[in-house]
Length: 256
View 1 (cartoon, rainbow, N blue to C red):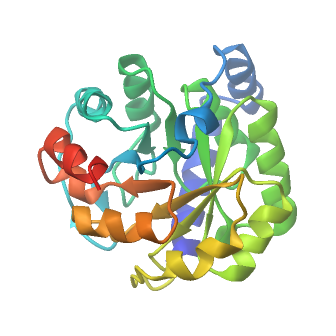
View 2 (view 1 turned 45 degrees about the vertical axis):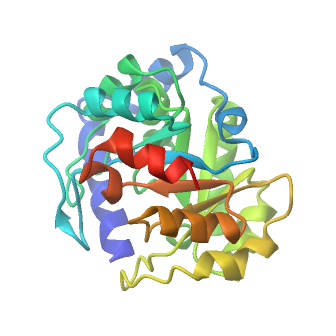
């Protein structure tokens, strides 16, 4: 499934190249206002922080919410206390777009993550040009050389990479490139099975000074508390927010 999603995202990016060449995307990225400091926004404090996600659909759950106004939802997230916002921009299975990200950027003042299946410099330039402050890099999807080059480019453009892992080996690879923000995804992106305890088994391998993000398998405040007890500085939440009153749900999650 991961390889299918990556291949689709790369194919779609290749199509966009026909209307917006690489040089144009790079120029727009470098001309954009400076990225917000995501590491400061997500830095550990005495309570958990929430990375709130705008997600219409997923391969594992199907349709979740129509989200006709992503900017309005993003404002609700910011009002509710989210520290940053994740915007799914993958179109085939998650029904997102870079337009969603641009609309969210115009509406909120907290950092925004481009969550997609990133494998090329072009996609990184697109992210910055659209106003992203963070870009997702999935270790399992990339060879180490590509991971290094994309991570370096993200930093060069003033953004932060959220480097997603699923195993001890992947955590090691993330640390080897100097990642400051490491996510552990409870969802196996090959089988889409969930293991909520995976974060706890890997958290100790992520040193202090690196922000730890727990991803997936969050439905209730108890799930957030589970991750917080295991050492999560930040918890990424999507489905639980788009299928509920986001401000009320954020209040419950931030109270753990």
